[in-house]
Length: 211
Length: 169
Image: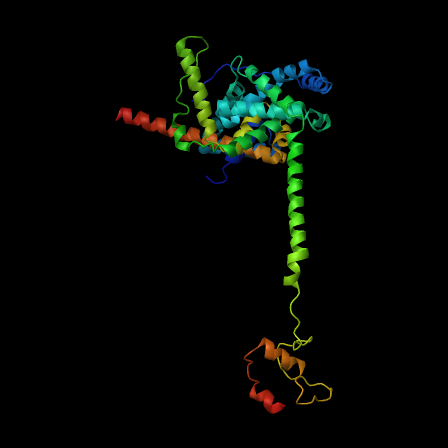
C-alpha cells in the first residue's frame, strides 16, 4: 500500500548562477532584470510557501511580501554566505512564520489521516477520472502534511519540495544541521504512524465487510 | 522485542548511517517483524514524498504574474526602507523613555531619595544588646549607648535580656 498515489510532477530548476547574474543587473538599475528575477524565483517561493501554509491566498501574500523584501534588500545579499535560492527561502520561511502568527493554522488531527493510503492510483491520462484521481492525490498529501507541526512541515517542504541538502536546510532554518535532520526524521515518524493508523482502519473495514 | 531501531530508519533508508550503525540496524531488522513493517512504511513515505512534494503548490498559469505589478508598485512607492524606519522609530521611543526617566529622576525622584535627618538615629546601629566583654572603659549610665538608642527606635518591644546573662553581668 502506498500512502500517496503517484502523480507525475515537474520541479522547476532554479539556476542560482542565473539568479546571481540577475541580482547584479537589478542592482545596476536594469528594470527588465526585476521581471526576469521574479519569473525565475517566484514559482519556487510560492511552492515553498504553499507547502508550509497549505493555503493559496496566504501563500500568495507570502510571495508578495518576500519578493518586495528581496527587491528592497538585494544589496544585502552576500554570495559568500549562501546562494540566492537559500537567501530567498530564508525570507520566505520567515514570512510564513509571520503569516502563521497572524492567522492561526489548525493542525489536522491524526485521526483525519485515516483516509491516507486509501486513495486510488492516478492514471497518467487526461480523462475526467484521472483529474479526479489527481485531485485525490493532492488532497491526500495535503492532509498528511497538515498532521505535522509547522516546523516539521517546513523541513519536509525544504527537503523534498525544494530538494535542499541538510546543510542548506540548516542555513535556511537557522538551526544546526543535526536539528534539520531530526525534524525530517520526526516528520517521517509522524507520517509512518499515520500510515499505520490507516492500515489498521483498512483492516477493520475489511473485517466488517466479511462478518 | 526491545531496542527497536525505528528512530534510525529514516537515515537508514537515506543511506546516512555509518557502517557500524547500519550493520546493527540490519541485524535487528532481520529478527524484528515490527521494525520490518516500519521500514516498509518508511520506504513508502520517502518514495512518495520525493515523488509528490515537488508538485505540491504548483502555481496556475498567470497566477503569479498578476502579483508582479503590485510588488513593483510597493517596491517603488516607499523609497525609504521600512525596516530602516522601524529601528529608528524604536530608537526614538527608547530615547523618549530615557528622557522621561531622567526628568523624573532630576525633579521628582530627589524628594523620595533624601529622607528627613533623624538626630537620634545612631550611625553604628546594632540589632541586639548582647553584652560583649571588652577592655573598654565602662560608659556613663545616664548616657544611652548607641545600640540602646537604636533598639529604642528599631525595636519598640525589645526582648528581655536572659537571666543568665544578667546574672553574669
